[in-house]
Image 1 (cartoon, one colour):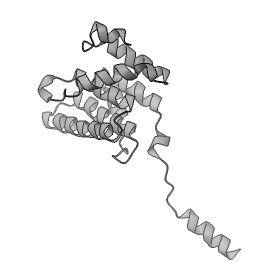
Image 2 (tube, one colour; image 1 turned 180 degrees about the vertical axis):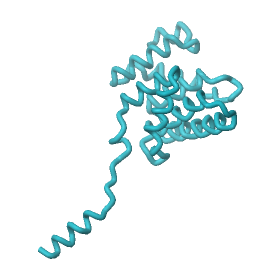
Image 3 (tube, one colour; image 1 turned 180 degrees about the horizontal axis):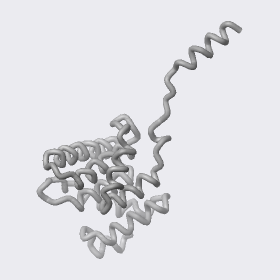
Length: 168
């Protein structure tokens, strides 16, 4: 009995580790992301939800954190803070792609970001590759919500030719 009590006391002092992925709802992150383009509060809420995410977290969460940094930068006034957020967001997105290059949603997020950024920021070097990847993968996506968003974005994108759209 004494050993059992000591064991229970020992267990109670171990840190309880809950995965960041368990705490975050991907559907909610997506919805905030889509609203963040037009809504400052959504951008900052998205960023707040992801503040505990780091490069050791699941790559999709790292990518969403990178995207959220860039969305937050859109609403900042100070140019140094904007540039800092942009650079950090870029670093996180590229880390996520490097970690998981075949993840459709990660490549979709990078494609969306790059096709909406002004050219002077110099972050448009993966548009063609991501577009080709997305066109090739869109019909293999099992998540209906994500599949619909990818298709809609590609159809509304000025980056896809009519021939490419026929493949979708």
